[in-house]
Image: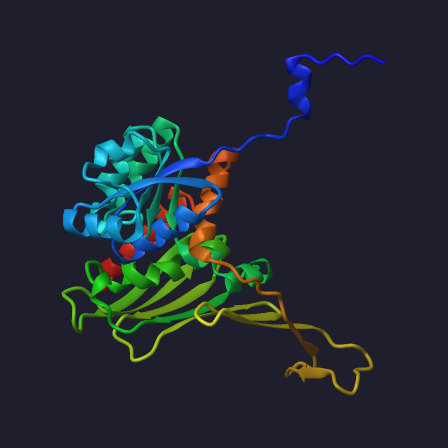
Length: 338
């Protein structure tokens, strides 16, 4: 039997080829070096090189790790598909605008920009030039949060604590933009409602901008979120608790642990070891625990590689520029209410 194939019919049987994206990194500070290492090892990117405005630091990093250093930002942008922007917040907008106008996809560290107007301009440019962008809200990729996110349904009260020891590296922005914005983004991703009212207070202790902040967010659907952030704590803590009808969910982002406590109608004849609660009206509920599997991962690598998937598959990034803008908007409203 003879088989004849045309190029068209043969194409049907060929697997879809996904090309490694050529990527360049802007910024070779502490986090930039982490991104460089992960991108260099990734199977979804081909690391072309990096740019850092500090030529001495750039050459030092190049000599130490073997990455290609570009002393001109435009030369790097011209030879890549994706720009990974890991620069100080104040330069996010200029770097992202320049990259988008060259038709490049952008991964940009949080917060997306320093001002809301800058973020909104990036949204306009993203649509105009047909590129994709993702914001580095890395806690979305924390394995503990991933393990319970599908269990968080219509939470009505949320409490978060994000405490860190002092590190001068993040003091170019208020603690709200440095730390609290992680929790703002996570909350906005699970609360399907608009923020109605914000009450907040912030105190400057060491920096010129607030180092400690507390905010209360009230949503249109009645949900209330109470957020606390500090960058002058004696210990590190990154915990969130979600309360909803018949469930309590706790996420420890630092230790990567979760607690899921749920309630259901008590059986008519409870077992000897069943935990039963009875309220003032005589309604009985059974308490039970769930232990979701928490998979080990590298959250930064995952956020970078899922962005590559979004580009290759033409899908919406997990943390889009729009979502990054919404988180920034709430963060700036909190700062404005101090």
